[in-house]
Every structure is written in C-alpha cells, then in structure tokens.
Image (cartoon, rainbow, N blue to C red):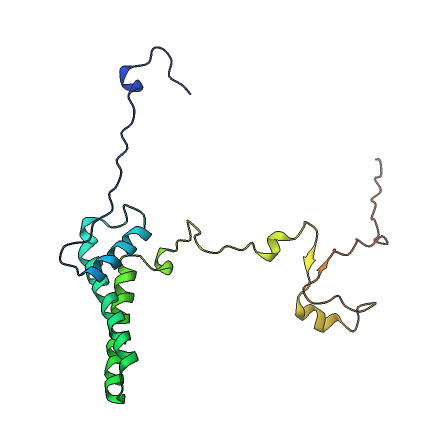
Length: 178
C-alpha cells in the first residue's frame, strides 16, 4: 500500500550503496603468494574476506605456493629417501590447505546449503511422471512375472494403473416405511 499525502524530502533522497573493496595482498607475501591471494580473492564475492580472515588467507597462500615448490622438487628427486620425505611434506601441505579452505568456506562442499540448494539439482524421477502413472519396481516383477498375462513390462517402465473392475457389486439398501 502506498503512503497517502505529500511525499517528504527524505523520500526523494537516493539510497547510498556501499561497494565492498576486494582486499589487496599484504606486503609480507612474495610475488607468487600475492598472485595466489589475488586469484582466490577474485574468485569469491567481494565481501567474502573480512579483515579477520586475512591471516588465514595469508597462510593459505603460503601453503599453496609451498605445495607447488614441493611438487617441483618431487619431479626432480633421484633417491627414494628424498622422494619419501618430499611426499610426506606434500601431504602435510595438502592437509593444511584443506583445513584452511574449509575454515574460510572456500571449498564447494563447505559452501553447500540445503536452504540455498546450490550444486547440481536434477529433478527427481517421480517428479517427472504424469499423474496416474506408477513406476514398476524390480521386486514386483520377480514375484508377478509368471502370473502377468502377456509378460511383465520391463523394469523402470511407466505403467498406467489398472482400471477398476466393472463387476464389483453395488449394495443397495431398502428402506421400509413404518
């Protein structure tokens, strides 16, 4: 419902929209770490990283760059002993990246919400069926296949419901007048 009468001066004012600035990489990061910071920040909404998450984001960028460095060393490793050490280091970095990503809700699984229904949502098979049809289950076919006239329909096929039997007996009551 609209307001009656003259409009106030306040109603003519425009609303001020504040735009969130994306955080810049801190000076303490190396060039590779700053590139990673920018890639992560640009991927998420502008207001995703408040000031209190910057320390976690710095650590995440460091771990990602360290994991890449370890990967280069794994490719160049000649001895099995060195390879074993590098693989355990890589696993530690992976766990740290995974933990930090989850805590900042960066992984797709941590962003999933049943309310928002993000992610792939295929319609349920029963939602696509027209009214009055049912889907034949495999257990119905195993028990009734021998008795079904003309053979049973294939599993998963849509079958119309059986018509009501015409020979059902209608009961009538007679009223007697007293």
